Amino acid sequence: MTAQSSSTTIPEPKMADGIVDWRTLIGHSEAVQATEPTDNAFERFRDHKQEYMAVLDEQRPAGVCARREIGMLLGGRYGYALFARKPVRAHMAPTSLSVSVDMTVDAVLRAVFSRAAVEFYDDVILVDSEGLFLGLMHVHTLVRLQTSLLEAHVEQLQAQRREIAVKNEQMETDLALAREMQLTLLPRRFPAFPPDASVEESSLRFAHRYLPSTAVSGDLFHVLPLDEHRAGVFICDVMGHGVRSALITAMMRVLVQEACANASDPGEILARVNRGLIEIIPTETGVMFVTAAYAVFDAETRSVRYASAGHPAPLHVGRGKGTVGFLAVPRGDFNPALGVFPQVDFRDYERTLEDGDVVLFYTDGLFEVEDVNGEQLGTEGLANCARSQASLPLTGLVNGIVSAVQSYAAQGFDDDVCLLATEMPARLMR
Image (cartoon, rainbow, N blue to C red):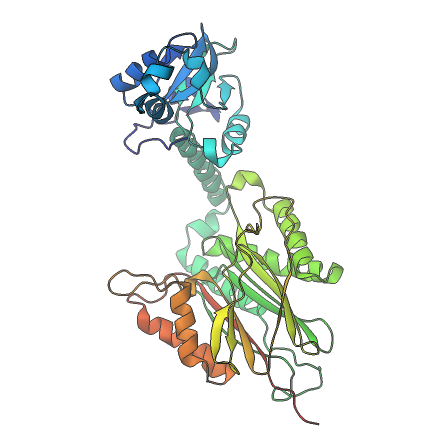
């Protein structure tokens, strides 16, 4: 169905003691009887600006019909002649949602926001305690109500922690401490492979840049030694940035380590992290999702196995061949972000690496920058930046890419930035 017009007037939610009077959220009461001909509905839509209209069996709702669908139906070359006199019941939306004035706020919002995307913007029918039609509520009104409830919840939490809310200096101190604690979640030094090898002799090498946009960040990366020749590499980007996102990154670090202790396949690890995240984050706090990628680098087989959860595709720098491309998943594969669906199977993908190859993992803050003309760099632009720095040593490559992006960006970085590089160096002769 089509989205509501942005010009629709949204009623102010009326609440008393935490109870919503749903009647105050009615946007309109336009309706047509199910037995009326479809051209009656067509004419009614012409007389008002609403996008949806209730279809009634006397006083009880049978569903809704949409301006766009009725207009397309009768506006075609032969549509009016074929469909105008047929009852409007035959041209209702496939599904509709009715809620009662007796329903709780949680029940209504859960019903509304669990709808499929194709029907998300359909008006919601409101009925009285006997199931009789009262009117239609716009989804924008219910979004506003949810926002009001969330804000009220936040205000309550802030009141309970008034020592933080009223003392800005203390808050700054706390943020500084939070930043220090978050930085401890990042690797202080990268592991060597085998463990007793020097950095120069390690069969896997790493380098990174980590640039939070605020005191604390929603980006996180981790490198885990799995055995003497394999390393697990994880990167994630929590929706938004600031304290809330930073708290989620701390949870992600714990979830990843627990998942790696019980699974070895990248796809299974992401699935375990996803289930753990959904168990931790309550749905009533609003939408919170995390894009992530996990890869296993094997220095013996000279390969990488990886899985993605809605995360930008890693860059593959083939130094020997002078190529830069993406380790992208097939277009048809479903790889949603973590924290959205409770049961998801994340597939593994494997690529062979050659001597000197580098795989670059990054968050979207690195390529969602704009030049003076407002043109975004994008992932292809980021690949060009990597291509121009490809001949540099690993640390120089990482620093060079960040510098190239900064030169492109007119206003610098306005989101958290994380860039993590893994190199498969040439085997040393022993």
